[in-house]
Image: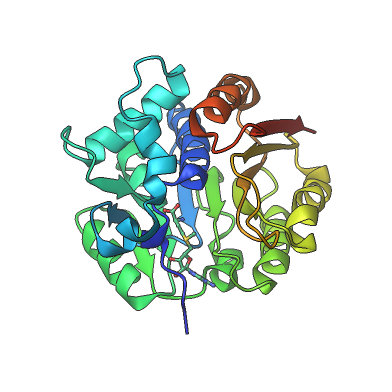
Length: 281
Ligand SMILES: C[S@@+](CC[C@H](N)C(=O)[O-])C[C@H]1O[C@@H](n2cnc3c(N)ncnc32)[C@H](O)[C@@H]1O
């Protein structure tokens, strides 16, 4: 039984970090003529109403996209990301938030295949409908971790993999590490983007280091970007921020994040101790 619904969290600080990084990676890949494949192992619904009862429950977008929406002083990468969200909203008010496959849909060219896996039947159905007009799109109701080895390497030998599980089950930490190892063994030059929560469990604390170790043989190394925006709750629980690890990061991504992360730290802070980290290997 899948309890997690991304609709509760759409557009929060973690989505902002993940989707800015993803958009930058996709822009870089699309700048070259040759096609590339996009694989989303945990795709979600592709779009979320920010006015639904899910989104309104904790109003998480108010600590994320809503804080950037009206700003006119955004660094270029953030301005580009907000423009994508605006495009998804048809240029009007902020009412909908695009998930990762929608961001890919906006940035991929018609020749770039988009493959998305999602286990929740409702979200998979919504995503399938959203991408139905896109040639080269495949939406599958199946376990994205299990599918990953069968998807790699992509025929074009250029590709981006997003690994974005809910981490509601602790096994997701080990499965993410296993997926990155497996992806690299089949497709050493692939760009892998893995999102992870900043929560007070040892698995979360250790995962960036373990992913770095797994990426030791990756030709372009790895990058870890972390954004801490909140204090832990009373009992030390709760998500205080999140990280994105990018294996084989595109040239220039670290420099872009050096500009983006300090801005996000200020813009999305929920307490005085907000911080960021950028580590490259
Ligand atoms: C964090 S959300 C994905 C958000 C999406 N990547 C985005 O950025 O918009 C994680 C999704 O993974 C789905 N899920 C959980 N376990 C899965 C699995 N093993 N394979 C595929 N999807 C899974 C959940 O139903 C949920 O929709």
